[in-house]
Image 1 (cartoon, one colour):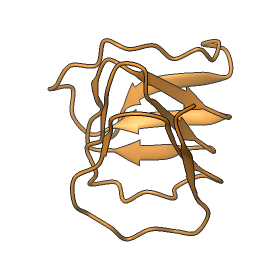
Image 2 (tube, helix red, strand yellow):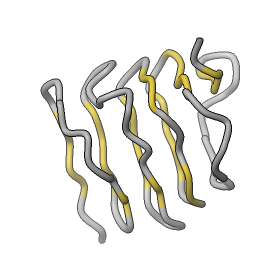
Image 3 (cartoon, helix red, strand yellow):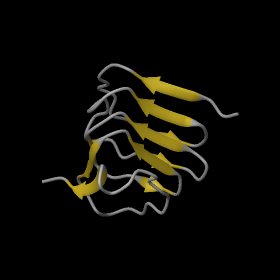
Image 4 (cartoon, helix red, strand yellow):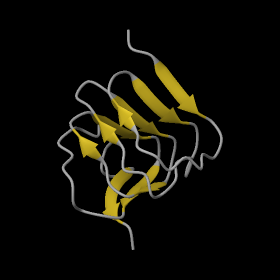
Length: 96
């Protein structure tokens, strides 16, 4: 079984993030820097604990949002994965 890593505090890391296997999770809203552009590989999961703004998400894995909204600063890039949360409780919207 692939590993899971949970980021509990606010993170100021601004480098690249690639989730190639397992799960990278945050424990609450806004735990990742808004300038990040994570790539989520097929079979991997980015699990967000609440509202989050990111530059863009790419890849073909899974993005989960516990509650709230994932705002993206750019519509460039390609994410062909899945988000299992119903649209009524979570959504993907361009950041303003």
